[in-house]
Image (cartoon, rainbow, N blue to C red; front, side, top):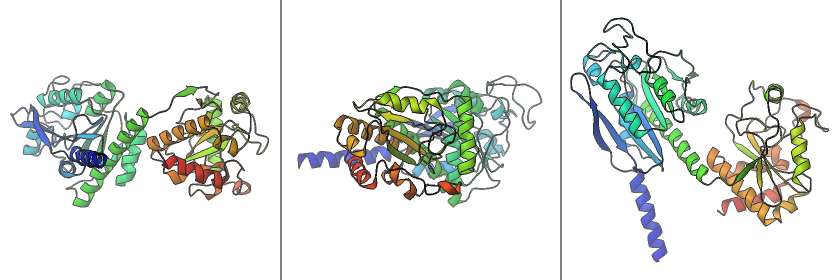
Length: 429
């Protein structure tokens, strides 16, 4: 009973941390003395920090509705929010893009600042870089919080700007809110350009909302998208902490092989890229070799395979050796040719051995395989049902193949019976 009580208390504490009350603090003042306030939500020790700025232009205030939703939304575990309704309270009070001194604050930051113009010109950048009190307050807050993700809400272009930020993160947000992801010109002196340059391991981007007030449904959608990408970052951080030991044994994957893989993706999937953008599947394989070396050599050779006679040569992201050593061969950002119909969205894990039974009967190899697979599942939010054996490839809902003769092509390794047991072991963490 004591253990049960401790678990119950831990669960209650976790909920309290996720829904911790908001704490507001003044982080600076405007030219006219109005307070610039940041509201922090979530546990101070939460590893993922997210800064959200509702407006930097006083006549673009639709983002305030998103801030309102985020002030009362339940937070994902491992996430803390820093919410700034506006960096430009004087502009909001006046209904002007600029602050009270006529400066466009989003041209006043020190990254690629360029002078010119007069106060209250549309993009007047100020007398010098960071000349404005509001700019200094936001820069000081960013330095103190060091946010992993920062979102600035603007209007009226109806898009999410890809410039300078983690493109996968931005595309995920854009997909969730139904806006296009576009690359805007490299404007001078913007908050995001300064932040992405000063803190390259973080990601700051602009969401351009439609003109006019934001509906309650849209505010919920944007708040939900932001919390979802924050939760994904927290999950990735937690997964990184559980990453098993991996030894790099790279195979050649330079420009020629990347070009071959891109041509393959065009032929087989209708995709004009080589990147593994949104992995949804993990495919388990057996090398049908008794040692690591011949499997690695086969993948490294980039030769036409004897079965399908295509380039690039076959490969896998990982090989798990019989002694439990995990070797990584290819960066996880690249497609790798290991499973017909699924290379566009799947990681490939090979296991040194001659049969499914060899893997399932080798405790060291099996434990390493499960640890690697769990880590990939956690990092990329891949569901257990989408961890499949090579022999199960045709049953995957993600299977797609444009070449007619290959639509029913599969292999015999890691059969359904083996994978049912493997998936049960995955669940027994």
